[in-house]
Image (cartoon, rainbow, N blue to C red; front, side, top):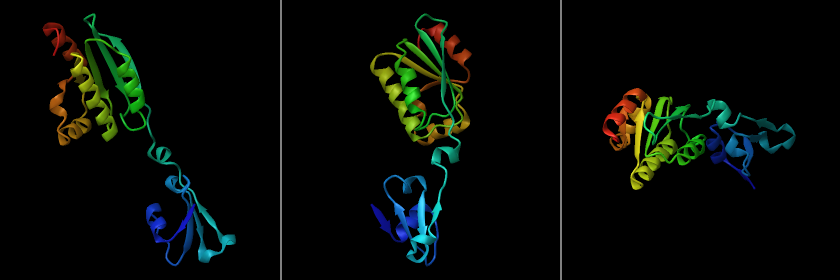
Length: 176
């Protein structure tokens, strides 16, 4: 399916005065591949190729390291990388594979979180609450904390500055 007109140029973020163009809408336009034809002459076509969004943005990986806590039923997940739409499946798999009574998520190496990642974090909290388990966040960076404050979800979570503080507090009280 092909469309012509100004709306495709606007979607692509291009300004092409007095230019007729076509964009293939079967997946190509969404990735920034635009076929531009001046005055409708297909022989003078120029292809505008941009890198896919993930390559342009330098999408980072999320790694999850698992550690045993001080207590027998305590797990620490050290997250390294952003929690975003691209990395949320990894995050959810790691969290679902744990069934400890207390889970400490160390976010000290999480530089940012997007709305999908935040939704996944809240879903993890809800899941733990429903099953009577405890979820604790540690090392929340200012950028992540700000997003949590703006969206009013910060108060849901028990947070500590460091993982060691959380481990000590939970060892003394049994749970948060």
